[in-house]
Length: 166
Image 1 (cartoon, helix red, strand yellow):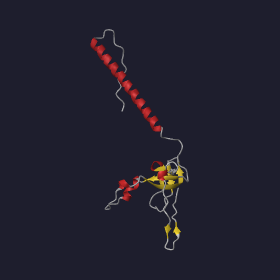
Image 2 (cartoon, one colour; image 1 turned 90 degrees about the vertical axis):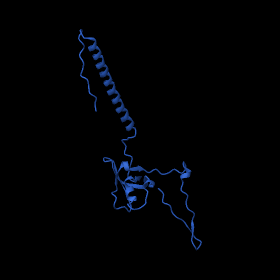
Image 3 (spheres, one colour; image 1 turned 30 degrees about the vertical axis):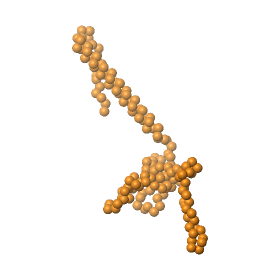
Image 4 (cartoon, helix red, strand yellow; image 1 turned 60 degrees about the horizontal axis):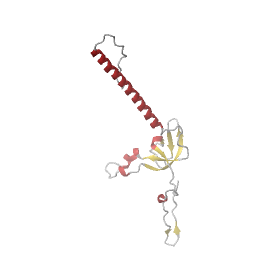
């Protein structure tokens, strides 16, 4: 919404009264204030655009074969079915790493491999996926998953569980 602009003013005649002079000064002051406000609004728009564009990149961040996490925002209704006592607020925000099988840079979409989910269309906008970053246990030793001890069978043999890692 643009403020109303005052039409350009003509110079006062030489025989103007004091009231005409004071009205002319008020109108000039309003015109200067409106111009200053327009400059400040333009400066604010430019600053907002600069701050917003700091987070944008021309490089598409996803590649075929890399891993991503999928948001659970639109799937929380599946989790909390009517009549059951499930709390969706305790549901994680993103789940498991999925493998990218196709990318479309023009439409900013990725197609991911969804095993055992035939009812979900596998193409998602990039705003719904995050790049999966493997935890560096050298930097964060407390995040390391401890391997369970071997299970002893009745015969005394040791059995080990294999953990799948990405």
